[in-house]
Amino acid sequence: MKRYSEAKMPLSWGAFRMIAFANEKNEPMPHLALVSDHMNPDKPVIVRIHSECLTGDLFHSKRCDCGEQLDESMRLANEQGGVVIYLRQEGRGIGLINKLNAYQLQDKGLNTIDANTHLGLEVDAREYDMAVQILEDLGISTIDLLTNNPLKIKAIENSSITIRKRISLIIPAKKENKGYLKTKKEEMGHLF
Image (cartoon, rainbow, N blue to C red; front, side):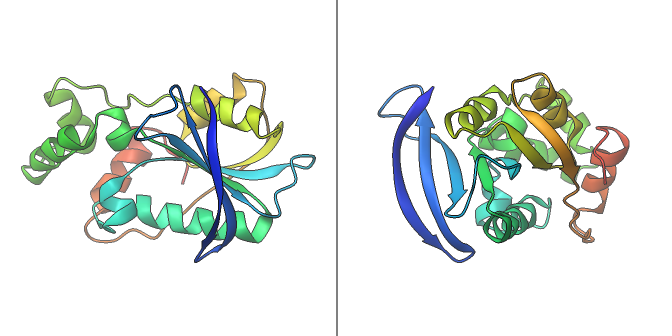
């Protein structure tokens, strides 16, 4: 995977560079790094590794807290000179169609884990080696990791990147996502 293109992006949170990373030049859905204009790789950098969630990020679904996590991460990245890495691995790596099928099962009473396994899918098929490659490309060696997910922590700890500290990303629960957040905490070990 390598850096193929970048552009200045004046976003509602502030000034960023958007950098596209992919295995091929014409990849239609590259991974992205949103880099604050005042990011300094010589100091610890606040970093959010965010997996794509079309329903939450774009359509503001209340089934999850993803869109709100992304919004808060972008705000903090602008404020503290950080980076948001946007990985194209929708629905914990199962894709949008399977995610919508899992939602149908959740509407019938299954939790997010049971819905995925009922469909013959992994509970969490995401990978984070791309995020490590992006951080290395950006010259970042020490980070303050903005996450609640122990799998992201483990992936970074097993890489060349040093985690100086973990910062919780707490979004208040809504009636529509209380069960989802409870499952993430109690069954997936998320650190709230």
